[in-house]
Structures are given as C-alpha cells and as structure tokens.
Image (cartoon, rainbow, N blue to C red; front, side):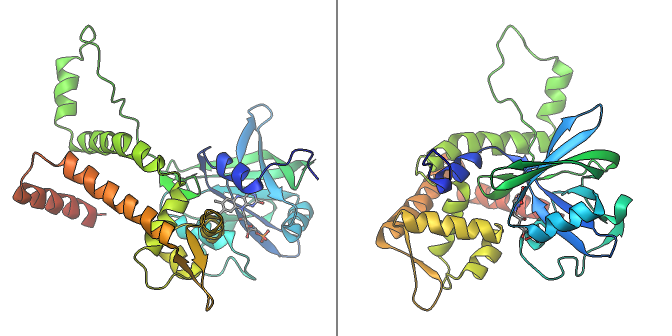
Length: 312
Ligand SMILES: Cc1cc2nc3c(=O)[nH]c(=O)nc-3n(C[C@H](O)[C@H](O)[C@H](O)COP(=O)(O)O)c2cc1C
C-alpha cells in the first residue's frame, strides 16, 4: 500500500504528458518460448558501459520468466508506420508473433523488421520497484535504421514534426537572403509552419475543454458512431485497446458516457453537449483561419492536399 492516497487514474493521466517513443521488447528462452510486449518506459542509462532500462509490470510473470531464462532481450524501437505492431504486442495473445517478420539476434531474441533502431542486450540487473521490475540491459550490439519513430503522448500515437520556431525574428537578426528565399519556396517547410501555426492557436482552446487527447478522440467518435463498442472505438481511434478502456473509464467517471446494457457505450446528455462543443470549435477555427479565401480557393487547397496525401 502506498502511504499517499493518489488517484492512480489521475497520476497515470499526468504521466501521459511525458511524450515517449514506443518499443517492442522481445526475448526467447533456450527452449524456444517467445515473449514480446509493447513498452514505452524504455530509456538510455549509460554510454560506458552501454546500459539501457525499461520497466516491466509484475503481472507479466511469464515475460519475466522467459527474459530471466534467456538472460537476453531485444528492444525494437518502432517506426512511425508500425502502429499495428504496437497494438498487437500490447494485447494478451497466445502467439503474438503470428504473421510477424523477425529473425533471431543474440540469445535468440526476436528482432523485428522495419524498426527505427534495435538494441540487443544481456540482462544486466533486475531492480524491484513497486508494482514493476526495472530491467537494466547491457547493450551488446545495435542497429540504427534512422526511420521516423512512432511516438506516444496522452494515450495517443503521435508523429515527430520538426519544430519550426515560429516566433518572430528580431529585426536586428534578419536571415541571409538566400536562406530566406530557399525557405520561402520550400513547400514542405511551409506546410510544417502552417500546421504548427494552426495547431498552436487551436490546441490550447481544445485542451481548455478539459479532456486528454485520447479522451477527446473517444468522445468525438462516440458522437458519430452508431456502434459504441470497444473494438469499434479502437479500430476507428487507432488508440491501443488499454487506452480506449482507460479513456472510457475516465469519461464515465466524469459523467460524459454511460455503459449500455447490451455492451458498448453511449454519450450522456452532458457528453453530447461536450462533443458538440468540440465539433463547433473545430468548425469555428477553420472558418476563421480560412476567412480570407473564397469557396473555389478552398476547394483548390483541398485538391492539392488530397493529391499529396494520395502519394503516400
Ligand atoms: C503504449 C504502451 C506502452 C506500454 N508500456 C509498458 C511498459 O513500459 N511496461 C509494461 O510492463 N507494460 C507496458 N504496456 C502494456 C503491455 O504492452 C501489455 O500489458 C502486454 O500485453 C503485456 O504482455 P504480457 O502480458 O504478454 O507480458 C504498454 C502498453 C502500451 C499500449
């Protein structure tokens, strides 16, 4: 028992403000039992000797057992397009490796394909820490593929966006004309600046409505989906199943959603009003941002954006 009566939901929610990458930690026992789980508690510890750490929920008894027997594990840092892999390894399943491409690394630990980086480790130390074990690994080898990483923030997957430093430059420090002209003609740079400008004005207003990213997404989806069951919400929201559940619990606690008798969830009248505020706010913001353009210009803008999206 802790001596401090924290609300663990609130603590977990506050911790979710710390954005992280996502990894899948894997191991295989000498007898061939494989384990793999999605982990965002990974961090670097030391360069010399090379050490990394992550924490393992004590309820994952089988995972700890296999890692101890293997005395090795691999940390696979997921790339931006590996969201399904993250969800697959976050769910209990008898064979999480079904249909997964991998090869064996040191200590037979499964190495996943398509990652941003991978660290091959021996188990250096296991530290008892509350309801988790801290596992410290000594890095034997690593692969650096440099792919864009998958991120995690407030219970939702995210992507890296270069920070464009939007602040006005002081007149005394003008940019070199060549740099200015190259940036002014670089459409990717302009798109990033535009998204950042839009977001920095809009997100604080959205956050002022009081919900985390994952809660807001679930609320908004419930306002339009006929079927409010967890599986459907998970499919449409791209959130991990555990986050959809946590968001539903928080929303239920706040009186915004109610569980249905036949399964699934529905917005309460207060929840409907809150969802209406989210929709109205997004429409208002868009109307303001694009106020100086007429309908045909906006149509052309949509065509350009859609054609860029289709190339992906
Ligand atoms: C984004 C994300 C991060 C997670 N991070 C951790 C973590 O750091 N440590 C952990 O023990 N579980 C973490 N989990 C939960 C495990 O992935 C999940 O409970 C998994 O099913 C455990 O596997 P096992 O029961 O086969 O050991 C995370 C889940 C998600 C979706």
